[in-house]
Image 1: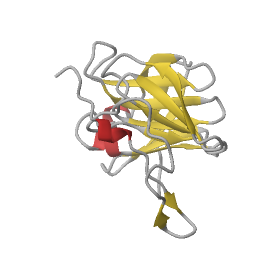
Image 2: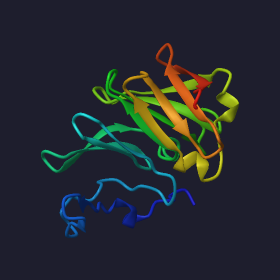
Image 3: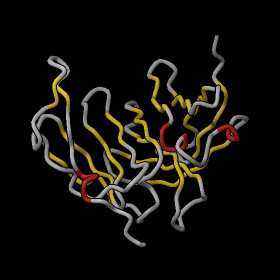
Length: 182
């Protein structure tokens, strides 16, 4: 089926952290594009608290001040929506890691999305720990993935016993190494 989207994946629910209660349905507008049945990524800007989501053919941005969605960019269908993503606020870049069933990139790929321009760049991963990145199954869509402001790198944990340090390279590539832990 060319369209593996499900309309109910557009619903936005939120929790009031102070009370611990779910907000009423419709408090936030639905995502204005279809997400998919599994693995669609979401990440948040740590300062602005803007939320970015991958959909089947777009990347969308939600602004908490205006409670509105805007389309950040178009993406090839069934290529960029699955996986995991984290945002580097220093460079304004979302790094998205995941698999792609379309013709762009390889089975597992990296995309940089510039949040100021909406430009999407297909990149590559290299380094001694690149083979430890899990490329299939739920670990590829459910890993812990964040940007660490102090270390100035992305950190990835996929339940395989290691923490990976992913350092930005030349703009289209990232260096993957093991993060020493104690």
